[in-house]
Length: 202
Image (cartoon, rainbow, N blue to C red; front, top):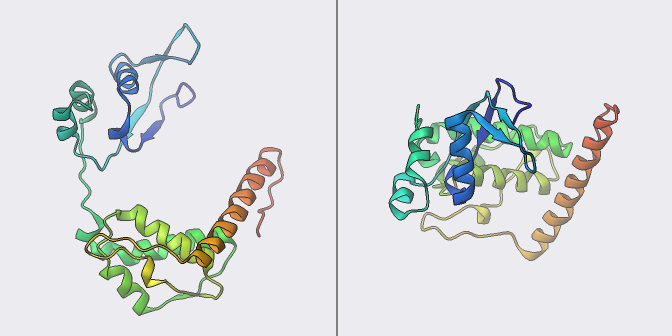
């Protein structure tokens, strides 16, 4: 954290922190200092902390799984973002953003998204919110073999909460292509670290 020096750190899923980590974070927030792992010298922390969670923290406090003092220390400027099902007007923009993002990552070119496909996205309740939307799009991009984005309707979550996954054959295709992409990402990172700046594509 010392290398941030006046920057911002984002901590996701803050409600999942174990008790000992909550104590350590509370100390950093209150005293503005910390110690490196294995160190014995206090280091000043000059950072802005932004956290996020999808858990009900007051309920977690009542259940004894989240510290009340840490909650009030974090709850300086709270922002509540409605679930995706309550802001469906954002879905088309998010769909196009994630398609572009994962198509670039996979080295693919997607030219179009049909209205029927967008209607499918709009009809889903998305209990997993943006993470679920993102994962469905990433999976579809990995399996897409044309320049027209297509979606397997069985991957969407039904309104009653039952989730359908890909067939075994599709799952094997996903796993193989994901492994290839992960390996390429790792190789790309190493090559950039040693000064090789060309992008590596499948």
